[in-house]
Length: 280
Length: 148
Image (cartoon, rainbow over all chains, first blue to last red; front, side, top):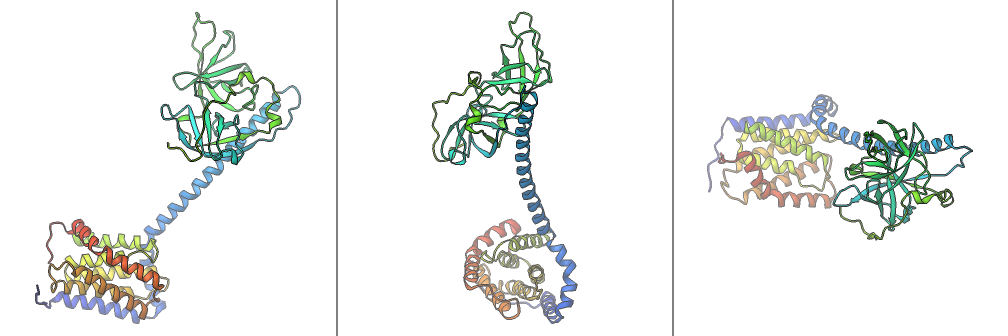
């Protein structure tokens, strides 16, 4: 178990290092600081770099959230201005408020038809409220719990949205197809739709205010035998990848003044939402 | 090469140690003891001096206490390991001795001891982690090597 301690040059060198350390202790403090400052900077540079990167990421995330909210507010403001500029008379000012809501759940089959957001009636969210992203319309709230709400996206089979061609001002009704896109129902063959046209909400239902960006026309195939013009639309909002949305709160008086609610599906589905966050 | 890797490992442990609170185990001390169990005396002393210098540089008032203490710890462990050759409990003993030496030196010459709860918690965690640290670092750095 015991082995003799052999004194070697290693011992002398080790003692020399320790003695040098002791000598360092005797050097005046100011000189010590000055002599070791470059070494300190070099040794701690990885830590400083990590801290700077972490802070930068945090600031970028905060800035991103702020800009997302700003973009959504601008989208709503754009919709209001668009509506006011094309109305025959002066449009009454509608106070719209945005509620930011992270997406905490999706339907497990398509990931695109239903979303669960972590804002509910306690946050002022009501069934029927439009849900948007900075890119465009996402869907609408169809049921509310105290802390969560169920959002029917524009790609859900039951979704119907009245739209307006921003260029030709032709209204139409959009509904989803099975390819994850929208197409327009019952568009007369002589209607003016071209690929690249931007479609916005028409504002003639009770859900969406006028002028919210919805999508762009990607194809208008020429089918002489068809009764109506087939128009295919790519939604601006990528529903399958949305992480946060904005719920538009519209005052009660303003949301029921158009009287043409039959165009948009406003029926509440028979669903209930648990009070606790649901699994993904 | 393994000596170089050992120094890199001590530096990484220092970076981790510098980012956490006083309640954490003394990772540098554990790393140094394990390295000193396998390296020769001069390498162990230099490794201790390097780790101590890193620790001293992070304190606002550079004192040099850790440099001397950890250099002595590295030398002492490398020297004493031959007395307790292959005795598994030796690691715990070395870590306990190194902790005592470090706290005494810091109290006497350094910036002062941390609060008693933090000191006790950190020391207890260090001792608890000692066998695991020896096992893992030995496998990581010295797998296939026998103690000198």
